[in-house]
Length: 232
Image 1 (cartoon, rainbow, N blue to C red):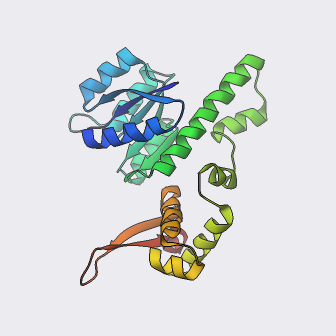
Image 2 (cartoon, rainbow, N blue to C red):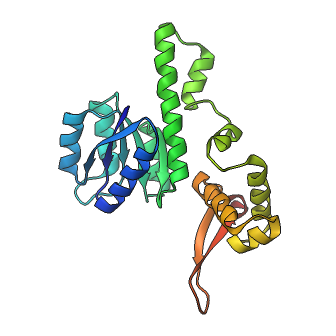
Image 3 (spheres, rainbow, N blue to C red):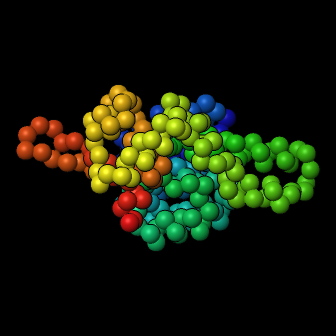
């Protein structure tokens, strides 16, 4: 089992994250810390394999604590789960060697894929250590790219996501300035629930963004935009 410590100041979010993590086979959450002192104490006592860490805390800076983890607990890996999207914050986290950086609101499929990649990463390192104390350039390249998988392989690993359908929806989204679940459903011939699942998957991957459109009456509706189009 991969032992996980969640460091998150909002206990409700921490509990949601715990449930998400424990849905993935091979993981167990061994602790939740909601402030700096709890985080330090639990790191020392529990010695987790993996930490899910936020940046924003009332009593500490998450990036500063990330540097402490890397200095004092070098065998512990870190995944950032945070609402922080500033370029400097992301770059600094990457420089400190986080395994992944996932923005909130958290999509389970996105976290699930990262946790599976992390499992494969650990298994490959373990297997290579058993075989030899030397490592090839190909294996080094594979470690640096986490698991060396291509995007299509990652897509297949997520239950219910078909690459052809995904490409069709992604292409349609790039052609339009914005699209709702209803519009995608009508134009592609798939159900609204299926369209919503694929659109949320694109958001989770970072290939699209979602916003709320408030009409004159009724409930707000989610509107999806292609990141590629935004950059253009």
